[in-house]
Length: 345
Image 1 (cartoon, rainbow, N blue to C red):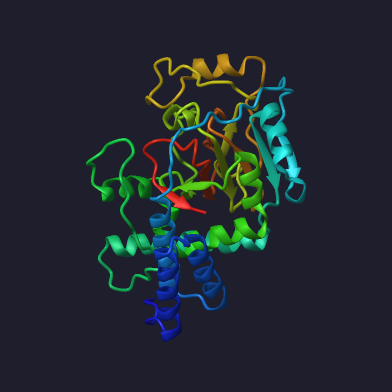
Image 2: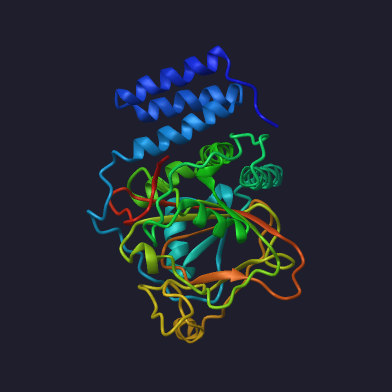
């Protein structure tokens, strides 16, 4: 269904936000659009939010200009640190990463909120499919792709990368203005923004390339996909990844396999299938006597980790259900990885 054209109020709100952004008040412009969209949802407001978040981030002095604070490992005990959403603080997160490389946050989103986000994820993928098929009935609030330089293969057409992502049930979150709006609404409501700022030492910037909506089929190929994201982001970034399960996973649907310990660097590739991956032998050596775990996630549970966690998609032949999830990577501007596409928070 195509959304009706913008009202005079929507047009005026977007114009006001653009004026604020032109005066270097981008965050104020984002707040104006956000408040208006909370009152009355409209795709033009959501698309303007994506545009200003991307344009505003282009003027930030990004780069690895300071060494991030190191998190020294605490001896692993073979478990994953778990906390309830209301108990999560930056100090709890640092301690959990030091102990198990990550923190499992129970109930970061309510089950009802997770269900709405899962339905939105389905709508965004359907809108992509309709656009690819040349349908004239695409709601651009659900799918409106912007420029997306490829971090690995400069010159590769954007649509090739999008098609590859879609073949694995994925879509960049920024390609769906409505889902990006919903994601940032959740982040604001649960207080994740101030927590990230405390953890990273700066107001975070999201990566458009590393922010992904995922609908994973039960027969997903996991062979050779053990990895640490630092293998391609860089070893000295300041990272915060929120991996949010929107449907139950880890038993009947693919979840995550995790080496639950803090690693101090990138493990050797050791002849792995992909240049960003780690071989099974390297994983076993890094884990040593720490057992590899596949936690069970409920809808709305989240795993928070940085670029050093050794993990992969966890699937088994007996699984029968799809998994819906949103993965969102944020970085400190002064320790931002090269080759990413920044989006203002």
